[in-house]
Amino acid sequence: MPRPQDREDVTLIRYRMRLADLERHHFEVACTVDDPESPQEFWMPSWIPGSYVLREFARHVVCIEATSGGRAVAMEKVASSRWRCSEPAAELTVTATIYGLEQSVRDNYIDRRRAFFNGPATFLLPEGRDDEPVELLLERPDDPGCANWRVATAMTPVDVDERGFGVYRAGNYDELVDHPVEISDFASVSFKACGVPHRLVVAGRFHSDLDRVAADLARICEAHIEFFGQPAPFDEYLFLGLAVGDGYGGLEHRASSSLMHSRDDLPKPGETGVSKNYGRFLGLASHEYFHSWHIKRTKPAAFTPYRLDRRNHTRQLWVFEGITSYYQDLLVLRSGLIGAKFWMQRVGEQLSRVYQAPGRFRQSISDSSFDAWDVLYKPEANTPNTSISYYSKGALTALALDLTLRRSTDGTVSLDDVVRELWRRYGARDVGVPEDGFEALAIELGGVELADFLDRAVRGTGDLDLGALLADFGISLKFHSAVDSGYKSRAGDSPAEAPLRLGVAYRPAAEGLALVTVYDGGPAQRGGLNPGDRVIAVNGLKVNDQSLKSRLARFNAGDQIAVTAFRGDELLEFSVELAPAPANSCSLGFDTQSNAAALARRRAWLGE
Image 1 (tube, one colour):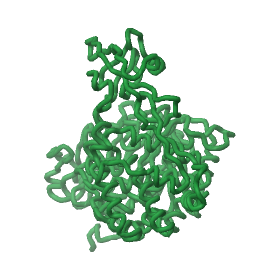
Image 2 (cartoon, one colour):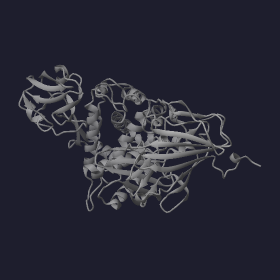
Image 3 (spheres, one colour):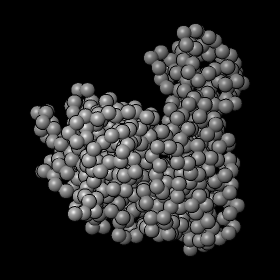
Image 4 (tube, one colour):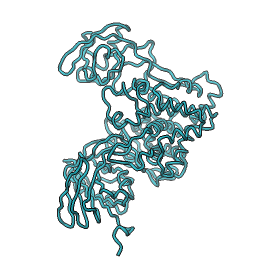
């Protein structure tokens, strides 16, 4: 008689998920293993692919127990994310209670409104069983308040009811944890792109026209599929949206993506055109969809396979996140949903984030990629002074590389060609990209003269001459001065003269302004102010977010002002010499003096 694992119709690893306690925010997850090892160890991942920081999901385990052969057996915790069962019998079931109350795209959440979970934060993995097939039973909740709840996931259903509860199948653990699950009374709309079924699910409160959103997403998805070439690498695709009052983020998966966005980012019923907020939503969806090819399948060799119990260092995150950030809005433009002016505004905001970060002179995008685990995802008050994001600086580099390729090859080769060839050679063949793979391919397709450019752009910390490159494509790049601002950098209009500034980023506080960052070499730093100080007055007059600019406008560059601030519970006064704000806010526009060759290059690039 064949052993169970020799039969193709038997799933050796069986998971059962129960929404155990909505008030206590508890999931209950059981894992049953046939023919366990003796001893058999189980472990939980420390991070989730796409979010490069150790989150140590085992910290959410409330309790854990095991049964084998109909009796309770001891479970011993042997490491921070690892447990051992020493004497299992023929079948072993380990049941864990998992706490979930993080409303994000990367963790778990459960209350009386909805449940959402990600595999790495949920499922224990039996040691040595990574590649075995998996079955998941999602139990239907019996709470009357959940009567309208349904399931949304891209995982393969095997035997589910009309609301999606029941049995799902995955080829292995990696596939299991790459399918997030939404369980709630969500809104839903379906559409097709290049013949492939797609679905948009939106949880949370919102007021919008989802049919209009679906039609717009269909155009964007078709632009992506046509960019990489048919067929798409999935049989169907799911956008899992969560509408919130204040929040933004996305996470890619092999056949789905999680999107957290403001409820105001969705268009009102009857609204036409693409507003700034709606453009932000479309850009987010485009970004995560592009990842279906460019990081989920075409990915660094360091991620093949993922090692979810430790940092997986690579210097290529700028290739995958930076290039994706470049294409996210460019493909929305090519889909015809937005015009070139709208796109240029988005790019100007992206460039401003780079030029407003002094850290770009200290850290290269290669180092930024390598240090993501301990820098980008763990920002501190001084981070803008010492580091740069491989998202924003990577997008700037991708823009410069695309224009350099198009100009030096007379338009015969572009970044489009490099990314598509990267997909054909690596992603489509399930081969990891070596650390020098992207640069070698760009040089192969574009010419060896790219080597110096790539060395400066990827491993250097100087600014690229982006203005000259854009001018060759009929676009002007202008720099303006921007006043002190809160968390988010922004592109501003050009004032008659450079405004004065303190050289800080702040957030409004109940009384005054809480300093988040004090920029290197700025007036505030020279005057002795620290991150964390709460500024309450300038020259004896109270200040807030609205009044700071008008207060500073009363002075001239070089004037000394008295800044009153709390440092903890101590009231201090500082003498600060004002200086003009630097010209580090960007805007793009059509160059009306461009020649015919530049205009032709621009048309070929932007698809005008």
